[in-house]
Image (cartoon, rainbow, N blue to C red):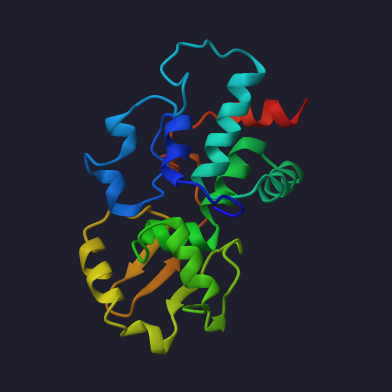
Length: 208
């Protein structure tokens, strides 16, 4: 996550939900949320009731941290979603799902979204055959994401791909495991977002 230098597991404990920052560790009993399901700090165990603005803020922070974005990036995405036709909250989630780093992660070609951003900025991926080094670029229908030729057969990625072949992939994406390619079939809709979030609270927060 940009600008954050402390343990990312603390963010999961703050939000009291798994943000999947540590890849496979998040699926084991070593996950801090499993071992200590309360916020970090001296008063983490205390029962503090959150109301109104606090609920909206926590929902926005949870969504922002899940996709690993800065406040400035997230606000820009919200403004773009607000200008589009349709329901603002659903537009926002669709755009967040279409980010290149998220597409690579949910397709099984990286351990986490942070790992996906590293791979992208290091030039390991192509979109429709062209260089792609910006993690936040949005995928469009019929786009094809692939490894560059030098990276496609790298021994580091073969075990990752093999272990993720059985991973469930959203219906708006199609994976060619043999060629290590991702095909975007359509735009994601609200049902494709599996993360537990009430996006209307984020809209209410920014609409004040």
